[in-house]
Length: 102
Image 1 (cartoon, helix red, strand yellow):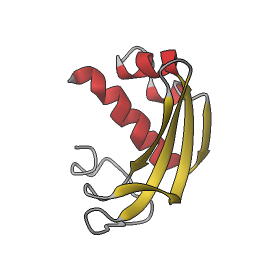
Image 2 (cartoon, rainbow, N blue to C red):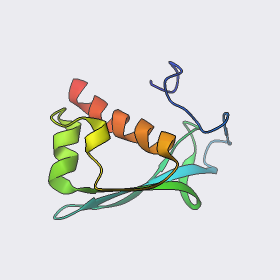
Image 3 (cartoon, rainbow, N blue to C red):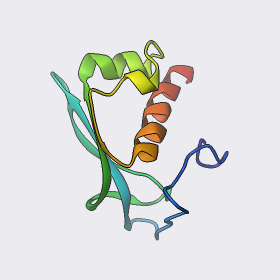
């Protein structure tokens, strides 16, 4: 929804790819019990996450991620570790915080 409303920033212009194709991705790492790693496609709704197209990496403690998703911590204060495209990181953290409104 942020992307459709023009609030997400795809990094210098859209990078649309065919459905099922690899696109720009952010690696989200949740640390702790029940955590894991996910490659989140950033631009195309039908794209798949790709390590070869990774533009950013975010690491969060599991409890901190839950606090973010529940709306108890601002997105700018949530990530323990960040590397790469700052705008992509911001967009994903705001999307996670938006889960509290569902």
